[in-house]
Image 1: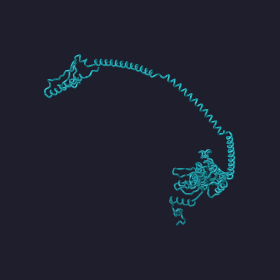
Image 2: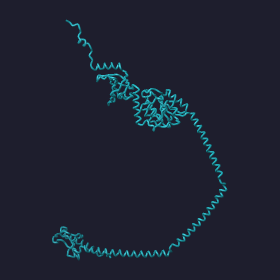
Image 3: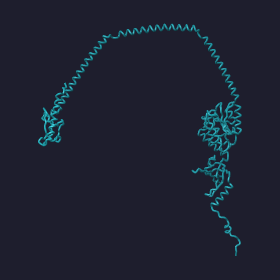
Length: 490
């Protein structure tokens, strides 16, 4: 019997079979096509910053979490650093991560979800910059009284620049350089900081004059609209500015970090123009007043000098009387000079006579010199005699020592001094060869001898002995002649 009811196995056999990769790709396409651009609000939980440069965190709601990631290439577009517990709105694309069978949000933009979070971040940044000393009052510069050039950093198309120019034209004419920058939106803080730095980098002698004062201005708005003036890069650009800066951001109730670091804060852009320049009519009145005061002071000074000159004329002496008085003073001085000269001459003559009396005569001088010469001659003769006597005594002592230690004392006792023909002493038998001629010095004379003559056999040796004998005889005769011709010591 045939079963007409299809079984479950038959119905499943007609369904397509997916691989794991195909099913993951199908789910990925389905999710990304329906959630290609989403904005999700939640609280950041467990942010992680691995070495790869990506940022991983979770968006947490009451009981639900959504895995989120910021790729390294998207970090340049993110202006907010994710922190634990931050209430934010994330914009991005929902996708899947097949490695863990889950979905996640690829974040491309982060913004604060409420004003409270912005104020919290603003207060943290303010405290950090204040700790670094960026808001110190002692580093702030004075605003110039009459700036010749004012640089304005603001939007070129808004009402702010028109209000500033209109107020400057009413008060005091000055040159204005406008640095056109956007004042709202992403990346605006970069333009504002660069404009402030550009004004500071201008040359004093350039074609475009360098500003004496910078005004950073913007109209009112919400906290989010004015947030670019709270950015750290703008605050540091104002802090590093060598030119005085007036901040005029928002209305009087609006406060940004640039207000703390600037040299002067204006409640409105119009008020900034009023702070930068004085009123023209007030300047004219002030100049008129100073001119009047200067004229009065000059008149008083001239009148005082005229009175002094009149009084001086009254006290002047007539020239002829002045000449007579001077002539009389000259006569008195000449008389005093003559008396002083006579007194000086008399004193000098008296001193000269006294000196002549004390000077000895030439005969007395020569007698004294002769007496000193005779005394010196006697002293010299006594010294010479004493020196000769000492020298004779010394020579006698040396002669006695020489005789006491002379070898001739030994020869008197019967000893003989044996030397060769050159006079060198022969101390041992081996020092003299057989048949050598030697000298024998006795106490009274010197004799010649030959060693072992019986052992000499050939004539050549005899000839050598004969030559040695002749040489010795010549030497002896020469020595005797030298002794006989030696001069006596005394």
